[in-house]
Length: 452
Image (cartoon, rainbow, N blue to C red; front, side, top):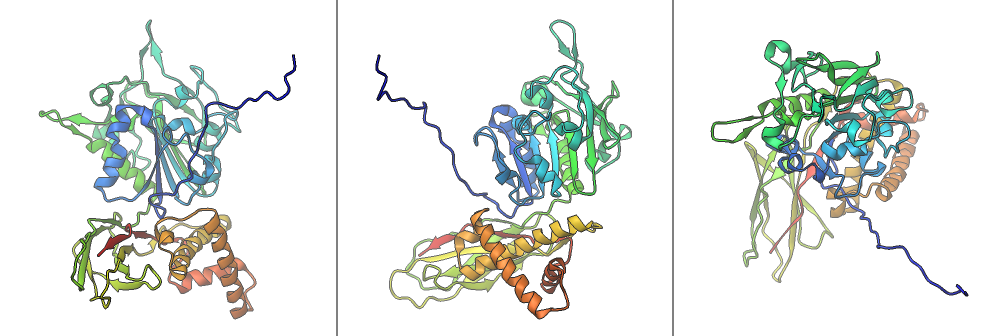
């Protein structure tokens, strides 16, 4: 038989998307999974953050077909993974790491909270871990118990009440003396408690132990570079129900706020309720107001940016505050023909000190992080590129920033011939803009609006 000329192709056609963060200046990334059922539907993590006016980025691993290093390492300093999002975090050396190891090695902080990390990765009932296993290297686990149970059929024996060990702000409100933290899996998610407990190396510290069995269900490994927290239970099942049947989640909210405090997460100011003007024959002036809240409680500087020539020129007006409401006016227009007026609001908080003693490596990383964020804003304004303000192309734009960085450093070197260290040159630039070492440059933008 002559097979020449026969044709074949792969099936079905596959696809992927190239995307941009909705909040590129966020310092926190939440990774979840829509396959987590009611847990994903209720989404108490985002509920609590939203109630506290916290700006974050969200990534749904199942909807996005996983996650890669470009997302994990985009620029946020903190990541929280919950539910079946745990599938993206490797456990043993044989599994591919999409970028969490590099994230931690470069100074990031990670919280993984789920009862199925072991189960979801197909581990045995009593797994053990050694050097090169992610569980050992970054969480300090030497072993654990996967879905402890007894009987036939096997019924979970995992604790549902845990005592905090008064180690971090996450667990200090849940000590034995304060009654611990209790889970209500079935009441909120209609599922069973399948918590896991861990065996720790000397590098990790227990933060939650079972009230009945005394096993370690939560631990933290803190180094000079990163903080890694792992909970073997669904902490967002720490809920209660009112007599009217409404769910309350004060305990979980206390835990999550404690995690934000422990990681020292910064948040850009949150901009909401931006006035959206209608088409009009009026020529102005036009008052624009918005609600702006800083989750860290810091002072806010807000600016209204607008243009009536498609950003050939852009105009800025300082906004005045009345509580959380900021306002400014677009002045009277001179155009007599139909004109499109675009505007958006930029809000900036102060520089947030972390009060850490930095090693040379972390000093370099901090300076680069601050410098990168400063140049991001500088480059955006220099190019008058509105897209740049809200959406940063991580690779291509970063290359341009690196070029700009070299130009600035070169200029600084000429101005400071006695300084040979690039690190000190960058430090002098940072300090010249009142950006002290170990501070973060926090900025946020509203979505551009069109009026008239």
